[in-house]
Amino acid sequence: MRFGDIPLDAAQGAILAHSVALPDGRLRKGRPLDADDIDRLRAAGHDSVTAAVLEAGDVAEDDAAARLARALVPDPDAAGLALGRAATGRVNLHATGAGVVEVDAATIAAVNAVDPMITVATVQPHARMAARGMVATVKIISYAVPGAALQAACAAVPAAGAVRVRAPVLRRAALIQTAVDGTETGEKGDRVTRERLDRLGVALDRPCVVPHETAPLAQALTDSDADLLLILTGSATSDARDTAPEAVRQAGGTVAHFGMPVDPGNLLFFGAMADGRPVIGLPGCARSPALNGADWVIERLICGIPVTPADIAAMGVGGLLKEIPQRGRLREA
View (cartoon, rainbow, N blue to C red):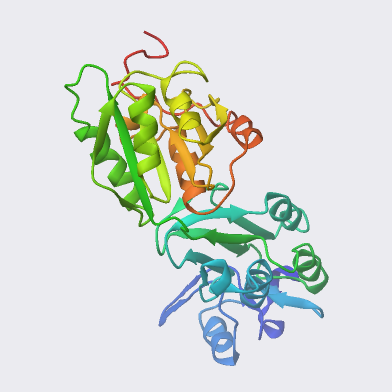
């Protein structure tokens, strides 16, 4: 692509780089100049324009953006994405339903390294999306790119694509809360948890509050047939052998990990019942609607994305979240 000051005699078919005001109107940038445009420019006293001229092998911005978007998402229905119409070198990718975004970060980096004029921007990996939320945007910065560069960018994407939205696979959850002195109603925890689950279309069973003791908590876990089991204790879990983790084991389940490098959210634990249903011990900050580490674990598990201790360890980068003023012990008290 050639870019610069183009004499009007050679400008037909060139792409206008900057809008030009004329006595009878305005020629807007990005417009391919036709013979009538040239006559109007000449009549207004112009003898040249700043424009881009495509050369052999170049691919115009809209075509390039559309081709790259299709490479990134070869099967939009399966990926839970809708590809927008290409305009001004841009194609936006929107979620067709609620879910959690999976991004092949290495592939996106490889695509963006091919040519500075070829760009892809996505939301953070594992971001929760609502229906119609924008997941990514493909933008061709220049008016055209070399076909070889576009081909290399598309070839950097595996056949399965690089972006998708994982839809919820769990549909029903139970929140079991414990009361230390018998006065807790669990109303706040139930309300806030219900709001969290609603975002992904997960129903919450009726409230359940049991004494803060291993046996009744284990029995409540055993009695529930919900897809996802959540525990919110009246007294914070402070060790992997504390009341709530022990109740999971007594109910026949396993505890895979206790603690996480996300603040608020340090005191989370997770595991599974004997039949594989996930169990999450929520930190006390989960009584607040503010973002905390539990959100990241809940959302992934609801959408069928496995969570391992290694995944938890990796959450420390970016894991310093906004403080929740209502917490009993602040970072800087």
